[in-house]
Image 1: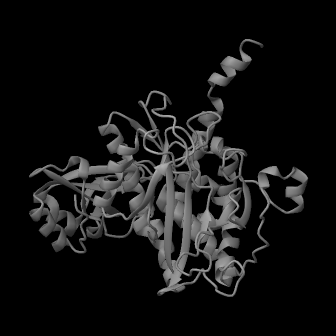
Image 2: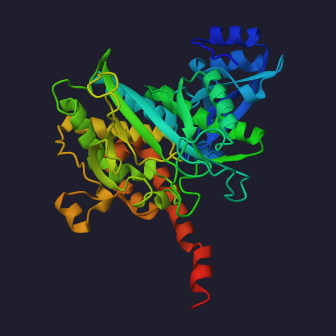
Image 3: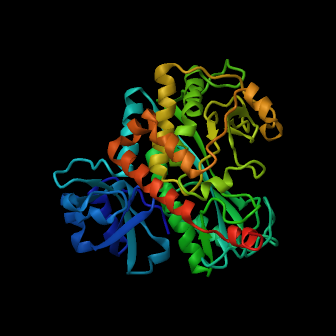
Length: 446
């Protein structure tokens, strides 16, 4: 299936006629990052572009209250693509990502896509264009009833061990057919764990790609009788799944993150950006790691970053400066290693950018890199080096986020307050849950 390149309403209509599209799925995202969708026929396409399509916002997690629930979904023509798993012959199905507005046409403050757009507009006024390159890991299981793995291959293993390589290849072709450039795909460290890397692109487009990626991975797995999950830590004592996010910002064609004169090839503004990320990481952790399960991954010993520090090459630090192409301007960037793939990409990218811009605007100073393996340092050594830890639980993370002016400003009051409310409710439910651990470990002895 070819990738399409629509820019206008007229382009979309022409492509629909060319490929005999019968249905168009309209996608948008709720506060927690769950994709929502409804379908229209070709006869409604023109009206969808002109007036949008109304829906009940009170039924969407974190959207409006029932007394003010009318919402409008307005399709973005630049996101038009055919759905490979639903498109056959003359009954093809396409999709477009929507922006959500109020009935009077104003951007809806509860739309995560709008929140990211707002931060990107802030960056644009400072002269910057942001690029993101997240690496989303995931697992294949036999079904959604448990965590029965389907193979025992390891990192970069060959296909005779990695029996799901063909499923991954089909997924890559589907992703390319939906407009993404795929750099590589491979088996990850844990059994049944995989990764497909999308080439970096502009932040809003990448957030759309992330949502599409997660949907495609699941759909192709389902086609092969498997279940794909982005749960950060599905298996006890096994590496979890992260969303390591590479990021840089450009001024025109120039990488503003790069300096040829600096030993680490990072510009002053790049260092200020990193300093902003480090200073506010504990505050935005509930956004980038939003599940109770996220904090089962953020523990020492399983390749997940726990410590708020930066380094070159060192993967035990939360922020890493990749060193694959030292001194090359276009390749110079930072990698934030703490996020996981459960995060809402629009909100996660927004709080990262907001924190980094705060560092630039206020001239934050970046300390020296920590090039030791932080996992091997004692608590006293970490204290001497001023290396704090990320929150140890969703409950701790929520309260740090609740007190953050930077996160509140980035998300806006509506999403900020709703997100805190939803997550406090989740944490309370989790705290009251009697787990298998308690039954198996404590019941026989107490």
